[in-house]
Figure 1 (cartoon, rainbow, N blue to C red):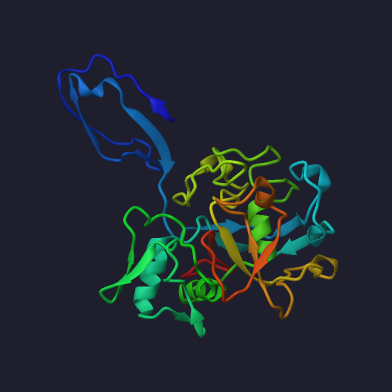
Figure 2: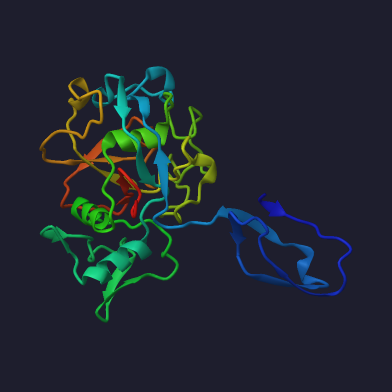
Amino acid sequence: MNGNYILTELPVGSYALTPSQIEYSFTPLNRSVNLPPSASSQNFTRQSIVTPGEMISIPAENFPMGCHSDHNGNYSCSSDELPLHTVYLDAYYIDKYEVTNVQMAAFLNSRGSNVCDGYKCVDLDDPYLRISYTGGQYVVDSGYGNHPVVEVTWYGANAFCTENGKRLPTEAEWEKAARGTTVRAYPWGDNAPTCGLANFWDGKYCVRDTAPVGSYLSGASPYGVLDMAGNVWEWVNDWYLSTYYSSSPANNPTGPASGTYRALRGGSWIRLAYDLRTAYRDYYDPSGSVSYGGFRCGGSSAPGE
């Protein structure tokens, strides 16, 4: 658990402190103390061990897609979130975490280009992007390796996923992974967001920047998918159409056949609690990028299967 711990009746000497639970770590990870006196106050913060690219299996079943006014954070439903309708999805996989700067830099270096399907993959000219092109290599800014990549276009996100044996999730896949099989306002339930559940802005910033992926364990979705609310907006595969729910198929919807904008989901570190709702839909020019927009990948199977 988080907090301070008191260890008594230890003999004088030097001690190395390491986490005992294999699924968790603490910050800082490596720490040595001497007795006496430096172990008098040691504060630990438990964190999940992040495995970039790890995927979670989502079973085949129905789920309610769209907005329900009784489970919507005391907000009114937007017209593009209606009607609430039942959708069946085949089994699929989705990344547990948003794609990180380290992952994107490795992708760019592997292909030696920042061009994805004729468009820039990321906006190297924007200071919010924590990746620079230096000495013929794409290099991540110090301290930002495990933060979600931002300033990535839909084309960059799509290329990353497909070239890694995955794909962008559909809007329906994203919403089910965030919500589960019951109507809920947010991935964790109907309770209002706090800075212990998500990275967002609601009159004040929780972080005023991206947070490392997997930082909000208490904000996990019913399937254990992390950061589905806040931190960064996430590209999905679908073209955006405000009236799509009125005519979308009941089984495995993949969005309109064409459009002008691609859909975004999840809210971000710079957006309000309203945008963090599992039903909320946004959209953007697929060739554009923003300082608070990233993505995660999905797939009909896990890579290698």
